[in-house]
Length: 361
Ligand SMILES: Nc1ncnc2c1ncn2[C@@H]1O[C@H](COP(=O)(O)O)[C@@H](OP(=O)(O)O)[C@H]1O
Ligand SMILES: [Mg+2]
Image 1 (cartoon, rainbow, N blue to C red):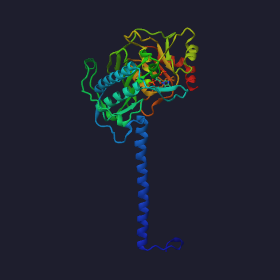
Image 2: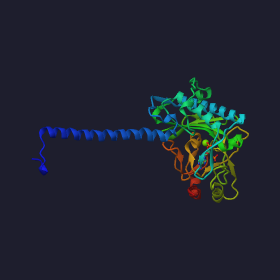
Image 3: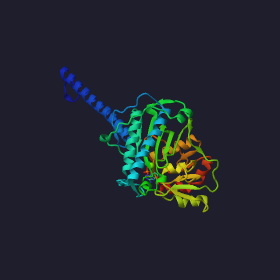
Image 4: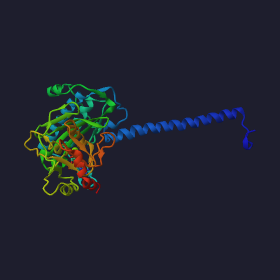
């Protein structure tokens, strides 16, 4: 006699057990499917910004040679740059607003951004299909372009850099197909760059910054080599500070409060341009600065290449509180930026309490 007066026959008991097993199986498989969907959609979607790389199934495969990745990154920056220049010279920019920044500035996109993005993305994707690529602009799958890499490595890279394999799944590539879009639309060509960055386990390792209108390219690999170097000296006491001209926030006011009124502030476009301002760059139109500060939100494709180049040369790019920036996962950097080389970075951080607060306003 079962409790509460219900009596089950052996057949009833078997049916009951089978039903129970069925329910358990259903629940468990649903849970697994849910976890799988979360992994595919959540992880990949967040990382790829919605481009075709977000499609499930593009799984990492085999090791990746960082020297090859550097070579194709330099080529991609140059090929993207050709598009940027061609569109600017045609004067048919097809300028569009793609949204607003948190501070309410219009975020622009042009045909230069789109065409450069397409070239850079498909060249890198063709060369390294198993690698995660995060790019600033959306890629429409029907727009696919096949661009093959001939696997040749430029002589200067061959001379300076050794082959080094890392697992494909440890790599995240960040593409900025046109940095300083605002200035591009204003025809302030000197500020414009195309950039590629390679992060390994979130650490910036390879940086390429290319100027399409002068043809200059800076590249560097952490623990590898570079084609660019730091300047001979920097002014630490009253540094010349390079800042954004179109997303400045409170940076000028607070920089003066911190370093005094004598401090020279240089407003300029482009995160790539501003990192190059800290280095020894043989380009007449390149201004020079001692420190680069940014206080508003900024995206990782804007800063990763500059971070890698500075790191490779012994410099630093951190948040305003001195934290390293991790180049995996979400595409935004919340804590502002302080970039320097051959100065006491920690001492600068300690001087900047007000800037950190300003970035939160
Ligand atoms: N508050 C903000 N929100 C979003 N993007 C920002 C930003 N501040 C700067 N950026 C982006 O960072 C890059 C450098 O900014 P700036 O020239 O102002 O120093 C620009 O990239 P893009 O031109 O690639 O869009 C700009 O759009
Ligand atoms: Mg940018």
